[in-house]
Length: 388
Image (spheres, one colour):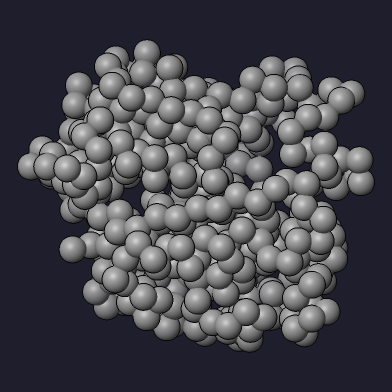
């Protein structure tokens, strides 16, 4: 019989830019912190899941595989998985939840390690595949049009909101400004955000792909984040406050899209609520993927926190999404403010807030329900987390 799945441990390495520490060692740092947080030992870990697995063609993007972690930590795993073919980054945590629900594992270690800044300092080792003369996979649909950065196709979605619904840059800028303000309260964000972003500074920044400017884009970072997922009948082995995976959903569109109407978050959002009795009104904070500042707006609309085409009005002025607002957003600083942790940082922060251990950035009250998301454009995944 299926049972509940819980996040029981969280860990994160140092977050920096061009860190000298090897990415496997960053992963082990985060793993040790997460397992200790849960009150477990590595002998009790019997599953290892990751996204997207080791990326041999572009090691900087994902330099560590599940087998390396198992070898380094002496883990004997009953089930492991690392693959790009998932709805989005947080799908790995969702897959781990499925594994413990079905009794395949009791405690699963999930990790995401990035070394894109460090890789730029050693391109021969970490970025050798970037010089290829041919492209495959999703890049075959974008590179011929010089859309080599995701900023290019994300900007197309954002431009649609500008032209159809009247979104202004001042409104869009509230996402980056809020992220900066929250990052200033996050000690792990110091290598990414050193001073608070102002609207004037945002508006004067150079454009990257209209309407996105420099501060609408996250920056390459080096870090590892680890999440421990445990079975409900194994909670007696855990010492930390468990956070239940109350629901999850994901969606993948064709990468060869041509003027697609809505990003995948608009399909994922309604599906998330189909698997739970919770509603948007029950959510105390949201941790929305913000590789680009426009993406949280698609999650606000896709998850039903506001109507389609109105998210820019929802965030205007920044008060609603502030730490003391009606829907605190990206309280760690998100990726814009605390580094491109590629999705896993949002699950880490959601658990931090629900456990009420956020320190200076802790939201007020007694938060019990949070949403964490990952992905943008044609791929998306969401987790609904609850402190019972």
